Length: 486
Image (cartoon, rainbow, N blue to C red; front, side, top):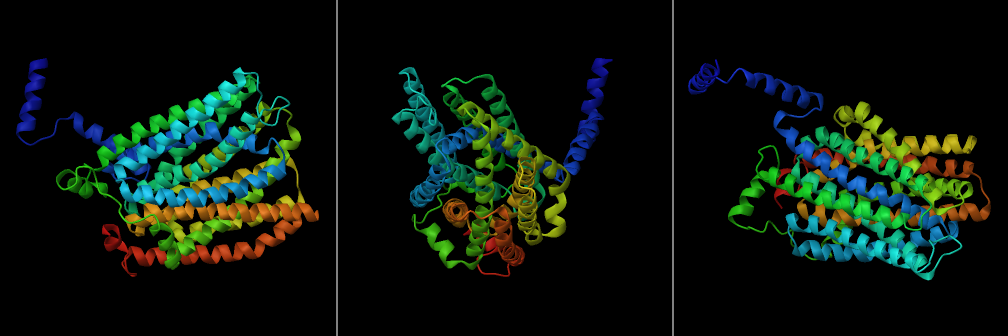
């Protein structure tokens, strides 16, 4: 029976007829692709991209609670000061980043960037381990040392800047791999991969911090985060190799050029000033920057409210790490639910502009409710809903805006928007929070102040959506295919 079966399959293949087993495999893949709103050939690329984001956010959410606990350990005044230092540092790093990008090609500078993160994490953890071995304690504790305080402050500023670069690099690479239509269909699924990584990171950090009060806790979490960033590099290299060979990626043509003309890959080119100049001279990029500033202001106001609650309800560094991790986990679970049941088709049905406008509406509504019931539970729900809207709805739509700009803007102007302007919004939000705290004003004033800002935010969102559509259809100079080839 076996030889006959083999012979029949060979005969069918020679006659141009597919074996009987093949339709079943194709049907399963096609069903999975339709379920996720993919075309069949896009599924392997989308899966690798989602795994890439899982590793990136998984690593980051092992580090974020440590950063937040270090930042708040010495009080809210110190935390506001750290925001100012972070913004200044962001400007310097953005300029240096532009210089690096101008000299390296796409395949090199993304793995190098993540490798830099790993090296820094090893350095931070080594300093904390050495200090703990010498009898020192963590920042904010009775046994705090000069080393632990400096490491805590430096780590806070470093991760606050690096986080935005890590995400900016990831999404800039995604809009390089996929075109505008693919971004609208696939970015939500890719975002789910990142959300699952964030949930795993937040949940694991909460569990680990609940099991120990060890002075080595933050160093251990840093090393776990470094391992996940190492995994992200491996997945990215695999994705890049597949994308340059796939007809379903915009990198396929670029991959041919890389092989024949430029073995090392295409350089972005230009100088480190190009990013800032592009933002300053482009109304489209300025509009995206204004959206990001308004986003950062609202996020900072919520963050300081959350930090106050945690600082008032915890006693030890481990408890603070666990509380921040728990808030992160709850927010990411809400994000996952939103991504699975809402986001996938939202951008295609509402368009980019109206999708972007959902976040300011949720923000002003949340502040209004919080002003009436300023309690822990309401704040937790508001924070989870706002972050779910931010990551699951607004983020994919906002990243789609960069699908219609040249590669130089993706890799150099985009960090200016995502890092420096975002942190400028943080400083503004911190200043507003500090002023309200000094004047002793209640949350009702915050809610009232967000109403006109939210109105401007909505109008800006709709305008950006229309501008993106014009560029995508070739209605503006440097857009569409011309912009992609620049």
